[in-house]
Length: 120
Image (cartoon, rainbow, N blue to C red; front, side, top):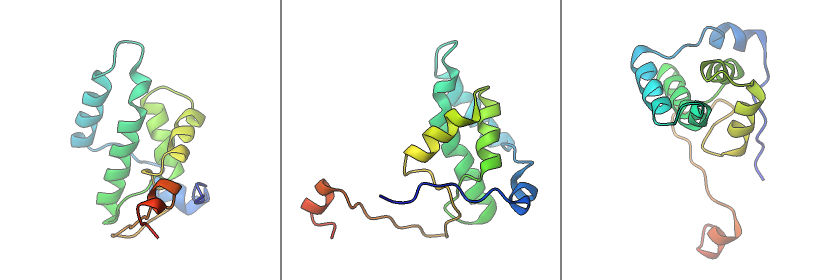
């Protein structure tokens, strides 16, 4: 299994990403995603919001994007939910990059079904 740990929370990381906020276009998309859920269930939009945050970070860094801890905290605050709940989602799904990645990020499935189909 791949390492799903966060990038270290350093002062440099906080300095760079501590003031993260959605841009106007991403905020509009985030609000649209939240509106899809019934009243009282807006926290269910955590996955789309993490994806939007990762895409925005990717645009700012000219990479595939990743989720620094301050960005995850911003998403938690945006949805008014505990940070640990957002971390649980971000660390569970492989579609979220928890460490910086490059412009091209290739992943190969290594599970048994993929190996049976020739991933090796």
